[in-house]
Amino acid sequence: MNKRILILILALLLSAFIWFEINLTKVQKVDIQLPITISNAPSALVPITIEPETIDFTVEGRGQDIMGYNLKKFAYHIDLKDVHYGRNYLPIDFDNLDGIEEFNLNILYKSPSKDVLIVMDNMNTMIIPVVLAFADEESEQYFKENELDVKPEEIQVTGPQSLITQIEGIVTLPYNMIIHVDDPHLSVIQPQDPMVSYDTYSLDITKMEPKIIQKTISLIPIETSDGIEIFPSSVSIKVSGEQEFVSLLEEKDIFVKVELPDTFYVDDVIPVIVELPAGIDLLGQTPTQVHIKSIPK
Image (cartoon, rainbow, N blue to C red; front, top):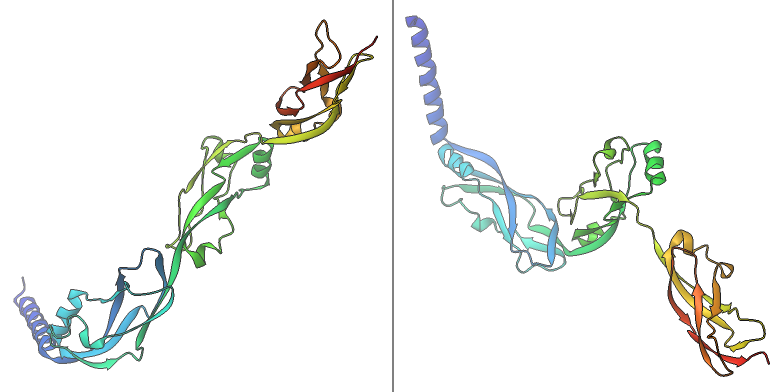
C-alpha cells in the first residue's frame, strides 16, 4: 500500500477518535422523547386514547451519559389499576423518571403537558351480520341462481364498545364465480382497528339450505259420507315445510275426512284423517276425533 495513503487513513482515524472522545466528554443539551407504556388495565376496560403518546423534555449531560441513557431505551410507564370508565387525567411525574439520576442528567425543559389523558372504554362482544361482496354482476347472479350461501351468516365481534357499535356489517372479500368454484371459502376484510377482533375470519361457501317455516290453517271442512253429521265439522291444523311450498299452501290443497268403521252408531267417536301435499309435514291438528251426531235411517 502506498505510504502516503496509509498515513492519510491513520490521520482520519485519529481525527475521528479525537472528535468522538470530545463529544463523549462534552456537556450537551439533547431533546428526549420517552414513549408511554401501560399495564394492569381492568379486565372489563380497554384504553382507546392515550394523549400524548410520549413524554417530551430536554436534558443536559455528558455525551457518553446521554448515549448510555438512549441505549437503555427507557419508557414512561403508567399503571392503570385505578382508572375508571371514561376520561382519566394522570399527572406526569418528571421527578421520578427512570435513568435520569443513574446517568447524571439534568432536566432543563419539561413539556407543558402536566397530565396524560387516558380514555377507557368497556370491552364488549356483539353478533354482527356478514355482508357479502361480489367481484362483478355475473358473480352475483351466479351466486343467486345456484342458491349459494355463506356460513356463518353472523360473526362474533369483540372490542371497545364505542368502536364495535359503529360496525353495521362484516364485509367479505369479493366473491368471484371463477375463483370460488375450486375454493369454497371466502375471507372477511380484517378489522380496521387492532383493538377489534372477530371469532372467525373465514367463511364456507355452501348450498343454501331450504328455509323451513310453519303455518296454521283453521276451520277446514271435514268430508263425510252422505247423510252422516259429525261434531265438530271442521278441523284446524299446523304444518311445516320448505318456505316455497308452505307459503303457497291453501285450504283447497288439503283433504280432511273421517275414518268410518264397518259398523257405527250415533255418539260414536271416530278419527279425523288429514292428507297433505308431498313435502309438507303435519305438526298437529284440532280435533283429532269427532262425534257422530246422526246417521241415515
